[in-house]
Length: 288
Figure 1 (cartoon, one colour):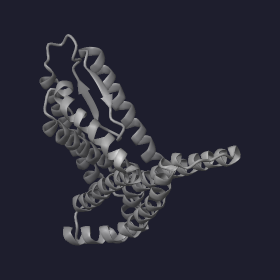
Figure 2 (cartoon, rainbow, N blue to C red):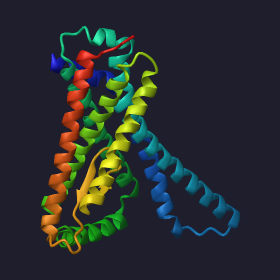
Figure 3 (cartoon, rainbow, N blue to C red):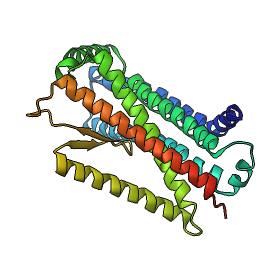
Figure 4 (cartoon, rainbow, N blue to C red):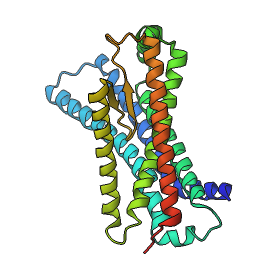
């Protein structure tokens, strides 16, 4: 049944995601020609000041439109996959049909989570490829290659581990954090929709309460132990780390401590949120 749920979910989500990202491809192709024209326009002699002024204004407007389009695609993807699809499919009128299927609540959660994470990864990769395609030329490759080689070479000096180890660990931490963040949103929606009234407001309030509690916990840990943290922008992971200076920790120990703590913390949040979501969808489901 899980395979059928995944197939149905991908098919339903693809109705929006594929056209949305095909739009990104079209924008990238158009922008590619214009950006390359702008980057080589210095070879053209323009004597008319008004023409140069309007061209500069057009450049700013088009670049701004491109950036806004990228942000819009990212936000729409996240909002639809993490919130709208999960809520509409399981907690509105569609939920009456979905919950009659011979599938457990855990299977529904896993299905939504899998499709969401896959598309969020695809979205991030396509946005990065779009920016890369817009800028790619001989000068860009020369500039990129020089600085990439410098970053790769200096990585062990900064983090204490080779880039071949550090970069995959950072990517793994980001993936686990994304999964945990998505499941926590599911948890807030499922708890909020167990209320009889104002379900959406309740879900928002629960999420805000979670964020407040997480920040309070971080502040307490910082005050009591001197351990600092950096809250990841991706929603939920709190990345703790002992101060490198005066702590007696080597760069390598500092790196592995941070990675291990971040992974354990995100996994604990994700598993706890999954269990609570499953409980409320199984024992406290309220579709009225």
